[in-house]
Image 1 (cartoon, helix red, strand yellow):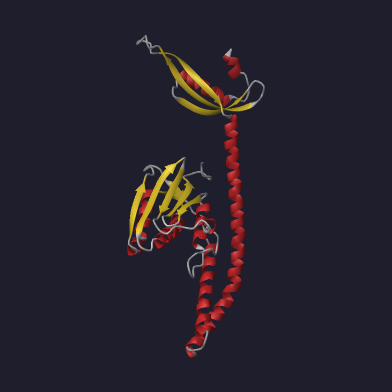
Image 2 (spheres, rainbow, N blue to C red):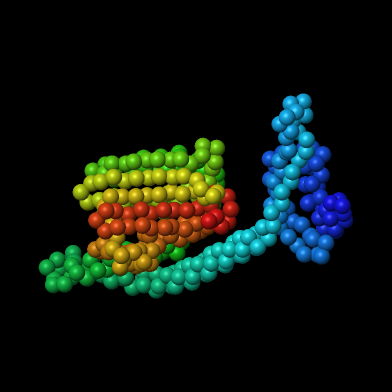
Amino acid sequence: GWGEVFFLQGGNEEFNQVILDVIYERKIKYSRIVPYCTPSGKKKILAMNSSYLRDVAREDRPMIGMIVLFYDITEFYRLQEREKELLIKARELIQEKAEALKKLAQGVAHEIRNPVTAIGGFAARLYKEYPDLKYLDSILQSAKRLENIVTQISSFTKLTTPRKEPCNILLFLEDILIHYSRLISSQNVRVAFECNFPEHEKAYLDRSLMKEALGVMIENAVEAMENGGILTLRCYEEKRNAYIEISDTGKGISEDDLPYIFDPFFSTKANAVGMSLAKAKRIISDHAGYIEVESEPGKGSTFRVVIPIRNNVPTF
């Protein structure tokens, strides 16, 4: 009978226990995913749901039996596991690329800093003695710009591994808005804040690093609204991921520039180094997350940060 099918096959201890729990403890609306080994030796992954049978004609005996349904989700489970493996490998490749870039940047910063400092120092001394000397001011300003580039590169290479702690997302984002309130109000920008993140749920993140990453996007959003506008900060939870969206009603990003905005040294701003968004992306990546961007020239942009609440890989 059914007992032979279920209980005689070896390696089904977990499956057998679930069956016994349902039968003897009369567990209803019970859902589990359990491994199962068929009589032929094939390994399956089954999704189980239990319910009860009712005799509507007899009020004294409303429950006359139970029904247990099994669904073979083996292929779906394998695809899901494969997807997780691919995501982990993709993350490893990104980390390897980031490490290679970090080493290159460290070398460049080290080799350039000393001569740039010397050029800037001597140019400053000459400027004091000969302020009217032709081209000296240009040399001095260029040296300062190179020093700024080296500083930005050094900052990028010195990013530490996130020290994640449980964080109340609502309070965390409110604190960020308070920190940037003066900048926001000075640009005639209004804030719309919406947080639908569950109160009992906490995200695990490095507050300092995440504040720096989100701060870059807030600053860019405010700068994009030269004549004022609305900065929208929205957060919510979906599929065990924390979503944080930063939207503006500014000038937007052109379709040609959009693929490159996270590349080091890419910037559409005059005299900008172009390391800020690259740094923000690395911080989010170090939190096992990613950034999505939507933008329409003349209407604004939305930066969507996605980080797992607890897991190592975001859930899709």
